[in-house]
Image (cartoon, rainbow, N blue to C red; front, side, top):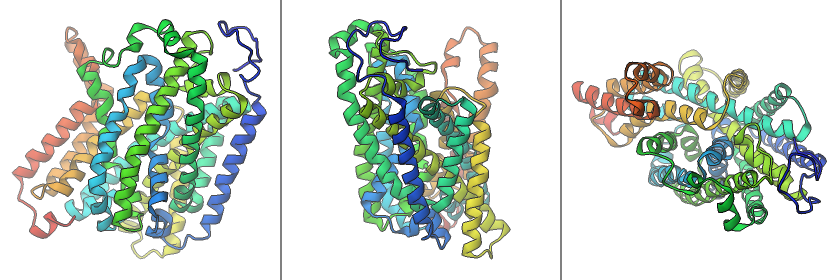
Length: 502
């Protein structure tokens, strides 16, 4: 925990600390006011919810500027502010290559966005069923549930890191508070509350990082002092990762973004095709800028730790939170803390809403209550948000760290959904059997490689040390694509109408 100016254990910081280690009251007040404002907006927007289209897609009326805000705030999440920060602390300048995967993925989405909006459905699973049948829909729903609930779980842990620091609470009540807020906020108004408050979240992210970076640079003493303090391998962009490691850290993000249900859901929410495409273009600019700024903040905070000017947090993924309390003036520190809260909330609510929409649309309406009224569907959507939020809460206590957990969740989704989804867009010869087999094997290989196959191979071939470096994404994606190709070419071609339904 941060101590008063001149507290022991902060060796190397000889300048006056009147602006450092800001009073907890200011940080707490900023966070409380901000969260109350979000709840207020959600309560106001809840009155507009009359149908599933309102709850899940904000009535399909989002203009470009709102779409940009919600796309940006959804994608820049805990994987960025904690996961990438954790990796930056470990590898240094090499982390600046991480945003490349997201940038390339958004460029592809730029060309797909109008096509997705034109299809005019609700979920990824609507696309999968239209092209490959009901079994593909059900498997897609299961994949979304598995991957996205994991993603929500570590958003809770990230938010609790801020709550513990700001309010001095223990870990358990902090996680419970964060989870409770996210669940209530998402259940209130669905996409209406998520999309419009994401605009404010996006603006807060930009402001917090713009003001924090120059201060952190000044505290670190400029490039000369940074070089002198850090290890040589942390100052090399391409010296840390090998080829296999690059694949392991870049491919999961790329694959997730290409098929991300949140991105598709927001394009379905667009006012029209033009708004969908323009929002993707601006998202490209915003994501690259914010990802680079977050990594820069984590790198500068790491330099301050190396110089003895900032205490190393127990979990290095919290390095930006540590900098907000230990290296910035009080007002800017509170603003950066607010930035972290905005990032956590805006990602958690989106990744909770997407699987809830999938369950209601793809299971409840499709199989259990096809005759359900709009009011019943909206009510069930809120119930499912609460249930999935509680499941994510249970998972939040089963893992530590952020970067590798995020990559694994991305891998489950990217290897399972993305090959079949792109076959639906671009390969008329793909068959229902091929898509179903691809989804099943992509997810299965990812889980098996993570928890058993890799360890078994390392035990059988201890001399092949490279096996241990192979992340699940590579075998899972390769097998998923190969199965899609082989099974599709081995089964009868789909009819003309089904092959070109998207």
